[in-house]
Image (cartoon, rainbow, N blue to C red; front, top):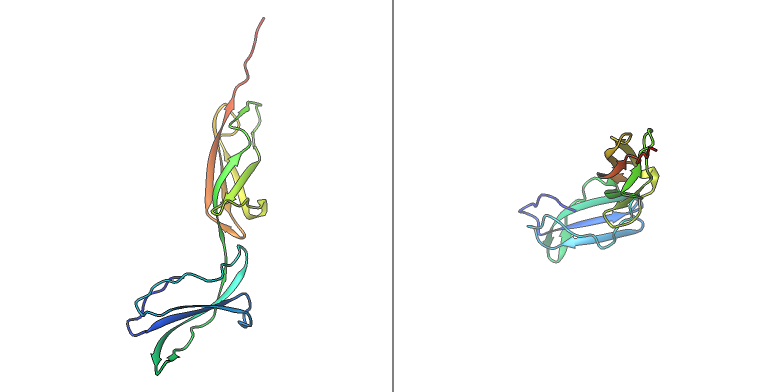
Length: 157
């Protein structure tokens, strides 16, 4: 998480939870007013919605004072990182060739087909064709790859 630091703050406290009432909450604190980011102690999973509130605080007589901001809900999104097709080349058929794709996220996990759309280009005639996937649902970003369409060899007698 990142923010703009407040020169009057002694530190920052972030509360985050899967529950809007914060009944099961996680907390992380940065005890410096010059901080502008903090790592989370519990990493959320892709597709989850988490609720977050933050406060800048000052410390007086060992007690922290400061109001929390309005609660914000954040849907955790993954990022499409790579796309690949089963083969590097396919034989010319006279029809569009649309090989199946394998999509991986930034952690190397396979992404479900419901979380991306696929577009093909230059995939009918011999030459270099392209496939592009664009994240949707729980994923953002896009990735592309190419494959070859090779013409069949004709033999005459």
